[in-house]
Every structure is written in C-alpha cells, then in structure tokens.
Image (cartoon, rainbow, N blue to C red; front, side):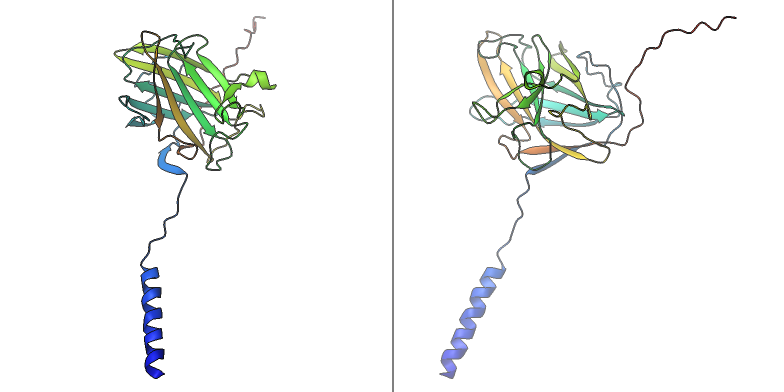
Length: 252
C-alpha cells in the first residue's frame, strides 16, 4: 500500500512537471511595427521629398504577397501636426498604372484602420484611406462589410463627409503616394485620435499592370484581419490649418 502511494505521488509530480515546462504565449493582434510619435507637416503633392519628411517615422519593408507574385518593397513615412495625420508611401512598382481591367483607378494604396484599436480590422465603420494613380486620387472611405467583409465605400455615400487630400506621382522609378487626414474631423465615420493615442492599421497595395491586367494584392505587415501595425499620435503644436484673412487697410 505504501509503495503504491509513493508511485502515485511520483507519477503525479512527473505529470505536473511536464505540464510546467510548456510555454504559454500570448497572441497579440499587432505586429510590433510602430510609427510615431513624430511631429511634422507636408505639402501633399505626390512628391515624397526627404527634406519635407525628415521628421517622420519611417520603415522600409518587403510586402507580403499571397500566391506567386513577386513581393515589392515599400517605405512608409508617418507624422502628424496639430490637426492632420500625414502619411507617405513609396514602392518599387514597375510603372504607375492609372487604369486597369479590374482596377478602374489603376494602382491603389489603401490604409485600413482599426478605429477602436480592438485588434480586429474590417469592422463596419472602420476608416479606409484610399490613394489611387487614376482620378480621383483621394478617397475617404469606411468599411460597410458587404458583399465582402473588407468592402468599403466613400463616407459621403453613408451620410459622412470627405476629409483630407491625396496625390500620386511616378518619380525616379518609384510610385509616390502622399495623403493627409484630420486626426479628428467630427465625422462619425472617421477615427478621432488625440495625442498619445494609438491606431492600428494595415496597408493593402493593389497593383494594376501596364497592359490593364491585375497584377497582385500586397500587404503590410501581413494579410488578414488581425495583422496590424500601429500609429502613435504625437503631441504636436505645429499648425497645419491655414486661414487666409482679408488684408486690413490701416491707413489713416
């Protein structure tokens, strides 16, 4: 009886010990790629000038591509002023296509935001900022979730407003995308971000080939509704709202 009890105790200890050496990993929805906080403003003209974006947080990375397409290399720059979020993206696409069979506006850059920082993208109402090679080059969209979970449409079609601007150009073998969007526009279909707050996002680049065919979908930091990088908003006093007042005649 005593031997049986000792055996039982040893067996229990071995089982518990084997359980104890198992590692428990917390799964995070965010990739660890963090942009900001960084203060600065830029003229949105589709030319990503180094001097203009010198204060921005930047990262160069290979895009994630499902399937057999060749991954492109992109560089994202992010900063904010007192009122606007500024973002610039360059990518080594082989041309800037302004139209395509499946992409009427040609090459398209989408920044899909996780408005409430929940760790899950493509929730109905989440912000989607769109920059296209063809006209119109800027789109302020939101996720509608139908017919596909990632489907989105312009804010103006949902009773909102179009806030921000964007431009694209082809310069020195790279496609350049520049955009800005209010940190807190007041539109219920937009995010509202304050200094110190964080927004998750994902890049989706849609490549239209020069012959009009569809090239590939490319992603950063990854594909799927839980693959996000982060933008941290800086406490920036740089004014970026310009109000033009009439000249005042001070003559006696």
